[in-house]
Image (cartoon, rainbow, N blue to C red):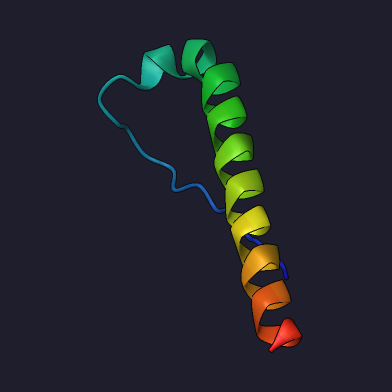
Length: 50
């Protein structure tokens, strides 16, 4: 599985706050990806066990 993230250049409201929000956003994204991968692994285990 490969995940590709691309940013889009341009002015976005609140862009000046990006450096302040980046650390918490990366932690949130990491946690969400870990939950998704755990759910994916559980699903595969259930189908393989059948």
